[in-house]
Image (tube, rainbow, N blue to C red):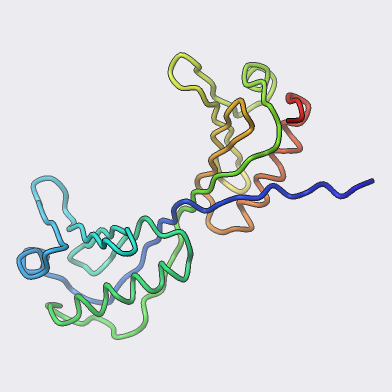
Length: 187
């Protein structure tokens, strides 16, 4: 029996959080650094936007940050280190002067299962699937372990959200392919 090829995927976004170990004055940062926007009546954090790479960070006065837009963990690390260096001269207080511990909170990836999916049958027969075609053309398949969701499209393309690492993405895509093959036609 030929070994089934694992579905390939492309990471489209990584969301990560970290603590810079700095106490920040967000008003001062917004007045001194042009890439920072701060409107406390809209949102309690400031927004730092880099053009290259195109990444955004939410900054909070306690030094916690959320980084959005990277496609590789190494880029997350470089972006957070760059942010810390940029903000260090403006810190109200240095709480701890160590390299920030980064936690990946969500990885978003796209993939192709190589199957034409019958979303109506899948929604009817498979548990943990939501499908409202009048609202949106994709079905949502939720896995409990790992806690990851797949947005399924008729053409077999999927968007994976909620994974913490690439192994979880691979695992969910493998599970999805096994689960859905009975409700599909090969492309």
